[in-house]
Image 1: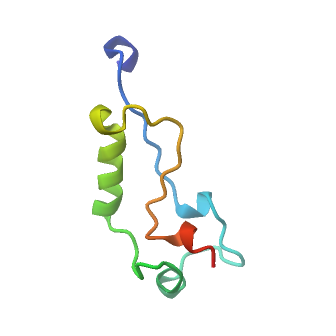
Image 2: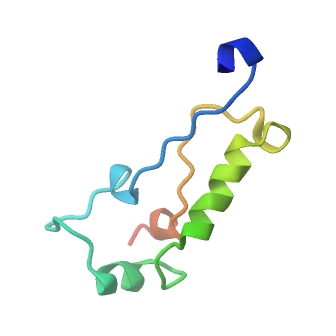
Length: 80
């Protein structure tokens, strides 16, 4: 359908652990995340949805291709 339309977006969603592993952890812990994330909270579904809407909107992100867009409250930027 995208080929026929000549446009479209594919947005894959994964955990932040896909970009940076969490040593000695097999699951998330509420405290582990909120103590490390500068915004001190988990992402909400609305946080993730806003990023997906941005990436799927050709007028706002039509020239954005092949990127990882962390919706992580600053997890990756903290580097701590």
